[in-house]
Every structure is written in structure tokens, then in C-alpha cells.
Length: 78
Image (cartoon, rainbow, N blue to C red; front, side, top):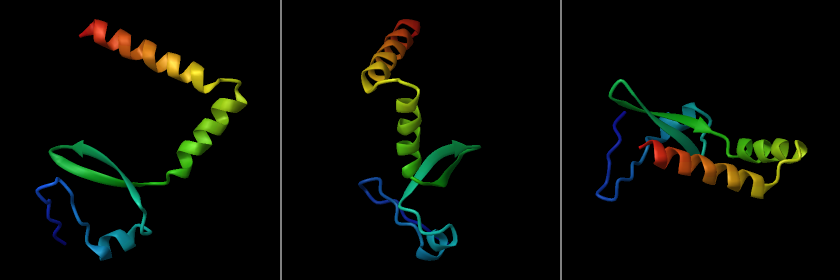
């Protein structure tokens, strides 16, 4: 099956290929050995992660501070 990349960097996947993996809406894109690999993703998993984070007593502000800290640390390492 052939897929074409447009000038806007979009790819239309063959319908038959998408149906073979359950017709997902979202895919995780990774590069492996010079190939682009698309893996179906269920967006509901992100909500499950947030639910667990809240159950642990971690607030969205805590997460934002942690992300900010990690970004500063990464910039300083570069």
C-alpha cells in the first residue's frame, strides 16, 4: 500500500491499512532504523494517567512546576 506526503507534510493512510488496526484516530510516530513507525494510540489513556496523578494527590500546578524544572535543567545541560 502506498501513502503520499503532501506539501503540508500530511499523509493519507490507505483505508485498508487503518481498518486492519481498528480504525484509530491518533497514532504515535517514532523513527526506527530509518523508518517512520505509526502505532495506534487511545487518547483515553492520557485521561487515565491524569486520574492516577490526581489520586496520588499531585495537582496540575505540581506537574507544571516539574515540567518547568525539567526544561530549565535540560537547557542548562545543553
